[in-house]
Image (cartoon, rainbow, N blue to C red; front, side):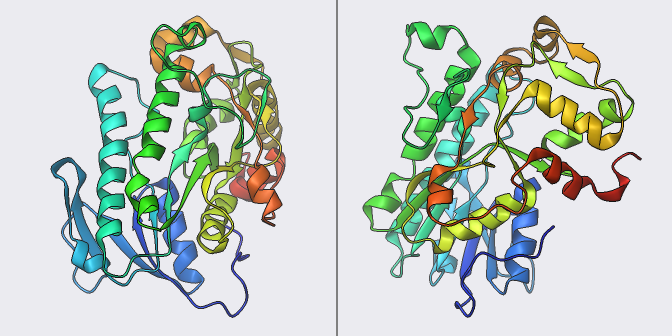
Length: 329
C-alpha cells in the first residue's frame, strides 16, 4: 500500500473511533491511520483487549460504552453485514438492520457526548443510485427509485432494495448532524485489494484462464484501489468543506467487460469465458441482479473539487499495484 498521506504536514494527530476495524477495509484503514500518527479506538462486539483502547458495543441490543468515547476527535463507521453472499429473507433483513441499528446507535451516542467529535464519516455505497445504465452519476444525481409500484424499481428489485437500504442508512446518522457534528457519507464502490473484496472472488477463475464477463458485460463498475480508499477516508476527516454524500470511487469507471479484459491482461491470462445472466441468477439469486448485473457509472466530483488526488486513477494501475510482481502466479 502506498505510504502517501493526505493530511497537511504538521497537522496534529487525531483520536479516531472506528467500527468495523477488523474488516477488509477497516484492517487496512487502521494500519494506515496508525502509521500516520493517529490514535485508533476500535469499537467492536468483543470484550476490550487488555492494553488496547477498545470500546464494546452491541448494536442489536442498543448498547455502546459511551463513556469510553469521550474525547475522540472523529469517528469512522464501517460496520455492516456483507451484501456479497446469496440473499435469503433472513440475510436481507440482516443487511438492513445491521446498517440502520448500528448507525442510529452510534450517531445518537456521539450526539449525547459532553465533548462531541468534529466529524462522523458514516459509510454508504453507490448502490444508493440503483441500476442506472450509462448515466454518469455525481453526488447531485437523484438516488435510485424504490417506491413500491414504481415502474423503474420493478425492473430490478435487488438494485431497488439496495437503493432503499442506502437511503435509510444515510438518514440513520441524522442525530449526529442535528447535534452539530459534520457528517460525511462516503458512497463507496468496488474496492480493489489483493486480499479481499471482489478480487478474492475473481482471482481463482481468472488465474485458471476461466475468467470473463458477466452477462453482456456492458454494466458499469465504479471501483477504487484499497490504498486510495483508506486515503480518501482520512481526507474526509480533515476536509472541513465536505459534508453529506461524497462519491469515493476512482475517476475512471469501467464496464464489466473492460474490467475482465484488464484483469486478464494483468494476469497474462485469456478472458474468453462468459457467465450468462441466467446462470448468475441461478447461482446467486436476487443478489446477482443487484450487484453483478446492475451498474452505476459514478464519478468522484466532490473529492476532486476538494483537492484529493488518486494514486491509482486507472484500473490497470490499481490492479498492478495491488497484485504486484506475483500477478501471474
